[in-house]
Length: 325
Ligand code: NDP
Image 1 (cartoon, rainbow, N blue to C red):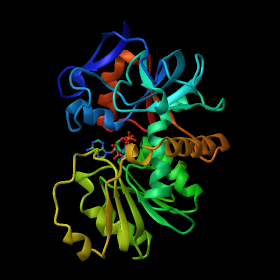
Image 2 (tube, helix red, strand yellow; image 1 turned 90 degrees about the vertical axis):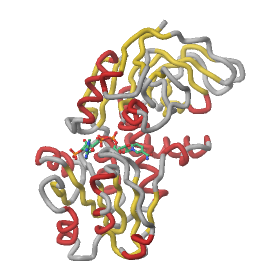
Image 3 (cartoon, rainbow, N blue to C red; image 1 turned 30 degrees about the vertical axis):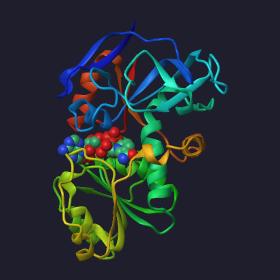
Image 4 (tube, helix red, strand yellow; image 1 turned 60 degrees about the horizontal axis):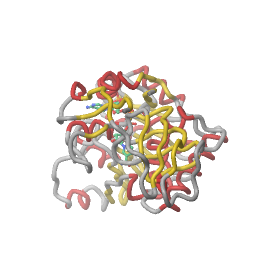
């Protein structure tokens, strides 16, 4: 039996239950890992509340990301051995001291990356990698708007977009968070709880507006985010921290300038093993070179996962949060 945090019924942070769960021996193609750190992500709250269905039914172990060492190797696994340092992103099972994983979803960690860094960045950092390089190709001269710029994804995105030569406009929920977003590389920060962010984007860009908007907020920033885009601009809706965007008439995209809109998710961008490895390698390289740093600003014991969710959903966090088993 190992310590884990499970969900028996959907609901708020209070449904996260710290308890012992069994872990079997690894089966075909699987490895067992002893986790040194587990990532906390907004998507964990979507599974907890039932916005995303659990692929393993109920109850389930919460969490979608972690890092640790291989302790057992199942039949058919050739490229991992006991003692290897690995990290992963997979649906559920993350908040536990030990777990099974498909070997083909594990990424070996370079020596330069610690377990805690890995747990703070695999999901968020690989997301930023594909958002800025594949969903819309950010480069020198790109003007982008990044919502929740002081958040986990937000701070990584600001640093990376700045590194690529973009003009970065961030939004943040408080003055303190705005300062953090600026330090992370946002050239301009809008306090979107107090200011009309569309008017501010118009002012900052002298009416030219943005090439791309990265929106992980959802309901509260829609459809205003569309008004921040120049004709043929890209609306990238990658999350729903304030709730999901409701059904809308697609003709709105024509009226606002023949806009493109997409709702991407990391799973599809790293479904092929070669994409997983290439995405992770680019992230490791950016972190190892110092172009991107991973601010782990909240660290909790595994048993305190409930508090971690309360803080995240209460807009009380900045950067990444991790749990230590
Ligand atoms: P964050 O650290 O960004 O936390 C969420 C932030 O959203 C808050 O700190 C807050 O910042 C802002 N926010 C605005 N409105 C609300 C609200 N009503 N309730 C709570 N928070 C609000 O979280 P993550 O970095 O883990 O994730 C950011 C987004 O990225 C999420 O939407 C997540 O689902 C998405 N995501 C998507 C992926 C994908 O592949 N599609 C993968 C990874 C993450 P402030 O106070 O500054 O407004």
